[in-house]
Picture 1 (cartoon, chains in turn blue, red):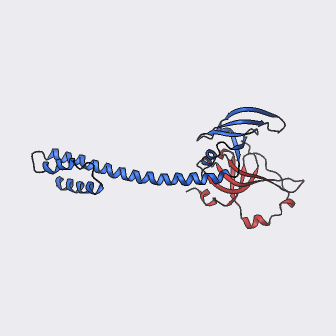
Picture 2 (cartoon, rainbow over the protein chains, first blue to last red):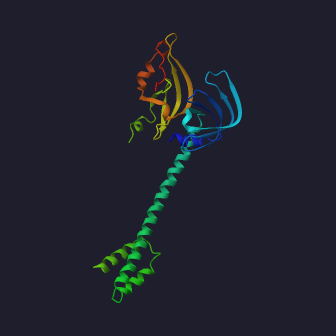
Picture 3 (tube, rainbow over the protein chains, first blue to last red):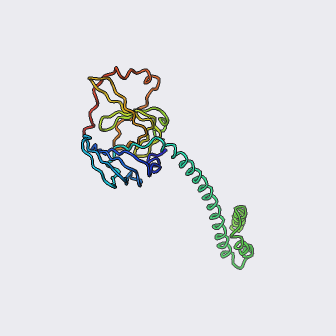
Length: 155
Length: 95
């Protein structure tokens, strides 16, 4: 689990942030980014020695000044669902990407088929080349057949 | 793969740049060594009283602030008699 995913999951939860200078900020997390810059609402700032306090409606903290964040215990159980959902989506995305690349290959085959067609203009290759153009929307099996055909044309 | 991967879900001790010692279960880390520590305790060493354990809960510690991450042998750690262990507290890292 990534620390920044946990932080993102903690949005709208209360938290304590200690800065490198020893000041602490208690508030509700509004938003955060990939640099750990954070927005807090309803904040109480405590000085390093712990004897002075400031209330403020909101504040923005640069990520690089943070020492640590204390987060409610239950937040870690909420991340797991998010992470699982994300990895599922990623799996599907990869599947789609695979599908697309096959389609691309198919289109490439069609294009090179046309090129062969051009090269063989006036020869026998012209007929099948034109036919191939119509198979643009075909599946990967057809793409492979096209490739085989193209190779034959090339020879 | 980073050596920290094998520490995941194990008890670790974190020494931070300000000289504090956090003990807890490593739940995650990233490329800048920001870490997630679950069931985090701070051990406060003292020469006059025994070692005090302060329960803190779930923490994200920023990588900038981390000096050492060490794997704890849980069997040995469970045998420690912390209230009767005295020691100098660490000072902060001097740059």
